[in-house]
Every structure is written in C-alpha cells, then in structure tokens.
Amino acid sequence: MKYLCIALLLIAGSAVAQKKKSDPKAQQEIIKSLDADFDKYSGIAHQIWEFAEVGYQEVKSSALLQETLKQAGFKVEAGVAGIPTAFVATYGSGKPVIGILGEFDALPGVSQDATPELKQVPGRPAGHACGHHLFGTASSAAAIAVKNWMATNKIQGTIRFYGTPAEEGGSGKVYMVREGLFKDVDVVFHWHPGAQNNAGARSSLANKSGKFRFTGIASHAAAAPERGRSALDGVEAMNDMVNMMREHVSSETRIHYVITRGGEAPNVVPAFAEVYYYVRHPKRDMVKEVWERVTRAAQGAALGTDTKVDWEITGGVYDLLPNEALARVVDTNLRLVGGYTYSDSEKVFAEKIQKTFTNAPALASTNEISEFKILPGAGFGSTDVGDVSWVVPTAGLSTATWVPGTAAHSWQAVAAGGTSIGHKGMLMAAKTLALSIVDVINNPVLIENAWKEFRTATGANFKYEALIGDRPPALNYRE
Image 1 (cartoon, rainbow, N blue to C red):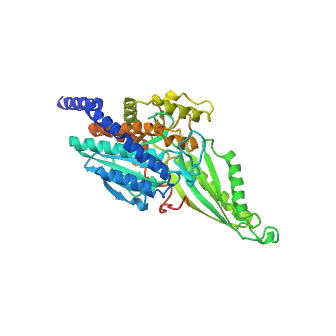
Image 2: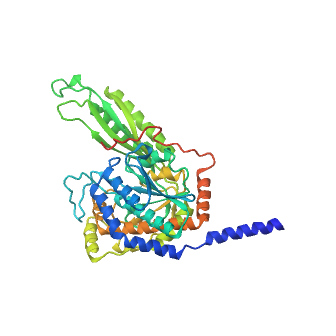
Image 3: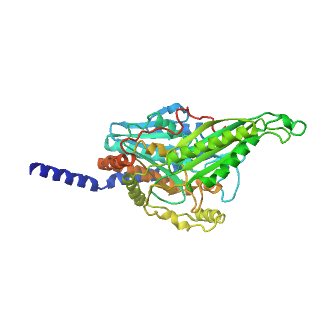
C-alpha cells in the first residue's frame, strides 16, 4: 500500500508538471523587449539582405550576427567545424542547454530590389530568396531576449545560438552535427520564412548533391573533330540516361540538375564539362540508392563518349524528424503571439506582387495561424536541420514574411524580405521562439516528453552517419 501511494503521488506530480502554465510575467517581458528592439533587428536583417552572400562566403553576414551577440553578452566561438563563417554563441551555464539555429546564406541567380516589380540590383548577383537574412536575425533576437530574461530573473541554464552557414546546398549544419557540437543539447528550436504562419510537426526530403566532372580532348570542331572527345557529350549522355531513369524511380523521388560548365566556344570540342545534381526523397536510404544509379549513369556516359568522369559529393542532408511534443509547445506560443496585418503601403506593395500570381490567397491570411498538423512523411524541400533533428529533439515554425502565395526561391520572396513585411514576420518568429524557450526552461517535463518521443522514433539501434561521409566542408561549392 505504501508503494502504491508513492506511485500515485509521482503520477499526480507528473500530471501537475505537464499542466504547468506558462509564466505570464516572462511572456510580457519577452514580448515587450522584442517590440522595443524591432527597428534594431529590422536594420540588422536589412544589412544582411543587402550583403546577399552565398554559402560559405557569408563573411560580413556572419560577422554582423557574431558582433550583435557579443555585445549582448554571449561568448562567441568562431570558425567551428572547419567552417570560417560558422560559429557558436553561448550564454549561461548548466542545464538545460537550449539550442537555437540561425542561417544567413543567400541564393545565386535571384538578384532583386525591394520593389513589387522584377528589378535586378546591379552588382548583386545573389539574393535572399529563402529569407535567411530574417532567419539568422530573428533567432539572434530570440536568444538575446531570453538571455536578458534569464539574467534579470537569475535563471540557470544555457542558451546556445548556432550560426549555421550554407544551408542552400552546402550542408553547413551537417558538419557541425558530425563535429559533435549538439551532443549535450536538450532541445533545439528553429524557424523559416514563408508565406503563412504554421508550426505543425512536419518532415522534409532527404537530399544528396554533387558535381560530376567530365574530361575529354579539345580539338577544332570543324577541321579535326575526329581528334576530339567532347566532355559536354559526356554530360549530355549522362543527363539523357538520368531523364530516362525518372520513369523507373518512385514517384516521391526528385532529381534536378544544372550544367555548370559546358565549354567555351562552339568551334572548340569541350575538354571539360560539369553538371551539378540533386537527388531527393522522403527517406534517406532511397536517396542513397537513387544516387548510386545516377553515378552509374555517369560512368556509362563516360564509357560511351570515350571521356573520363569523376565526381564530388558537395552536400547531403537527412529528412527532418518531427517531434510532436516539442512542436505543440511552439504552436501554442505562435497562437499566443498571433499574426499581423498590413499597413496601407504594405497592402499596395502586396497587391502588386499578387498580380504576378494566379489564385493568390487573401492578404488577411498573414493574421491567421494554420491548423496544427502532424505530417511525418510529407515535404517538398530539404534542409540540413534534418541532421540536427536526428541527434536532438527539434521543432520549428514558419511565419508570413512573404506576400501570401509567394513561392520560395523567387524574386517575389527577395522583394518582400527587403521590406517591413518581412520584418513583421521576423518579429513574430523571434517572439515565438523566445516564448517557447522560456516554457521549456520553466517546465522540464516538456523536455522529458520530447526525448521520450525522440527515442521511440529513432529506435534503440540508431547511429547517426552523415550522408556526406568524412569529407571536409565543401567551402568552394558555390565557386
């Protein structure tokens, strides 16, 4: 009877802990501080938007975020995992250790001004078409807001901001995971810019990428074509075979490529050509299988064109592992923060942007929160957050930093991200992240529940192995 009573007390105590409400005073402090610093963080985000630095070349963007965190009292370790622009900023000590991810790389080929019409910026070949200038800034703002709350209220714990470069194809986080930088973290939070407000527990596509380089023999294309062996023929033969293969892979598979080098002049048989490939699928094991078939196509193409081929794996990321327990914490706080409405000038801007769409959603959707859904096998994009999520419970959200209906990686996304529309969505994300961190610090049961779900999902025998193998960071993959 004695042990039964103890057991009942433990169960009751656990139930109370799980029902423990958020701290209204802390919520008010966090929201008030972030509102007060809105102009400051908008300015930082816009600077990074103007830098528009691509993967592993984000020198100024990384430095700006590092300096922002240093001035706020964080200890910064730069150049981690063999990556000059990667860094970790830490405040506090002891448990819990809460990780926050921050990205800051831009995309090549999407130069765009902050206008509702297509308008490239001279001298700026890249653009923040995925909103990572907002991502890194909002995550920094959240980390600083929580740090200030901890300092004021003498709260124990560790806040760790991860400055993660080259998400767009460079797999920056993968090297940081492989280096063991997340091994003592309790939970990780992240977010991403988007066209709606959502904190559902969803997955993403695993992805492997690399460059196939064909070498042939140069010759005069008219006077002595028989002496040449076209490297471009090798690339085109490979692409033809891969395109025929599309009929014979599962419907969830995605294969993309661009020819990055095809020769210099039509009258010279190309001695060198290069093609850049992505392979995606909801399951990483299938990505590995399809990738092997792609490499065999490359070998066959080289044999058939009498050229030589080699290849370099430049990136590889896991599918995102959803964690419902942690995602519900984020969803609760996103609903507490709420959406936002457009000013008159923002509405005019947005209406002009939407004229470039078909069947665009209502502009008022920026003030709505999407229904919470659990989508473990769904996803159309890929992210190196996936690797993080397989070593520590991870949850995130998306906020409307773009005009409703906007697709990622578009000029419309770049344009809105350079305006107050992007900044308002960024502030929503910063508040939601900060409030979620405060909740898990105040209520350790939330962390325990996240780990229980995590261990069940990964299984007892799971061992993390990066899809990139043991190669060093591909620091020149954008060159």
